[in-house]
Length: 410
Image (cartoon, rainbow, N blue to C red; front, side, top):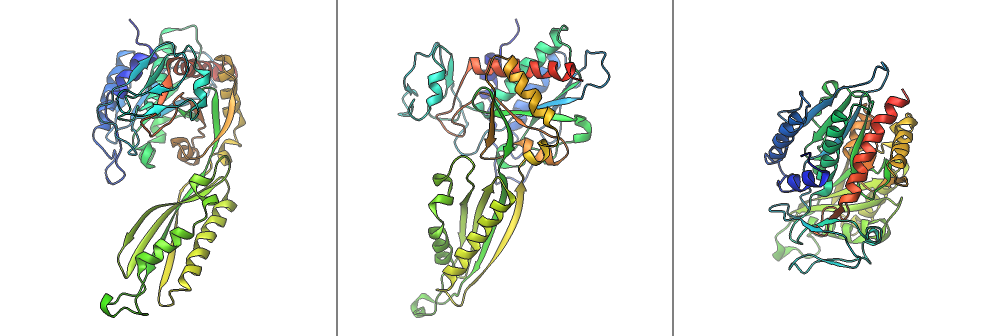
């Protein structure tokens, strides 16, 4: 009996695959390879003879073309195996709520509740089968839903020869949640012209734009002196860093922004009396917006230091990823085909922008244009995470329709 997308999803989320930002290896945690080995075996079992797990934890596989058309572009479907380090992913116990009747959802005895007021998309799920956590862990729909959907679609494409399609590559990555998802991807081996990540939320969403992202590090030098003799002489670098953070405006912070607003977000502060380091992430949809926010932080730092005349700072800017729309606008057919596939799958397409990044951001600038399609999950990175079986099935149909459209329009 063929596995359903729900069967696969529940099997995959049982495997702990959290990545570790403090690790220097690739993958950052060996346990990600546990899922990789399972996927390698499953893909081979359904008929993808070249499916394999490489030394970096990536899984590659090919669905062979079954069309006589010579010019069908090779496309790739991609999802990531790791789950976020924000909340524990150990011993996940998913709960299936069949035929959801509406209302808030209590998550076991954890005391946590998924409230309709905070998750209005639940209003569109009446009668559907929902999968939640028990309130003590992540669920892992980000992005094991995407993996389950791609594998399920792959089996359908292999078995139903009436569905004509070109060659399709599958890529499952590690360490996406810590920004290293495609560091070791072999694009020559992958051999695709265009790609799609299945890593989005609400059913019907197609996202062709992400934040552009920088890391900004301020290294602060204070004036150290014995605290017993410090009057009017000590300039504590930790206090200087803290004063800079305190001056960051709320309307340029994650908690004070939405939509197309960018932000500055302090993520680490460390040091001693004489030396401190403040790390911030800077996000905006435009280069001009990024530049404005860098300048704002440095202006705040300079102003703070007027009260500490013996101290100084240096600012170091490191590029993390860039808005993939710059690349995707050069290939409008990629998004146009996805919009049509979503429509054919029976869902209203929703064009969106991501307040974050995906593997597709990096892949696009590495030469593989790659927008993001919905996988159906909600409340990622938290114990309130949930998804519906029906939305996963819509994603499976979208993948199949995309394969057909690229063949039709070749």
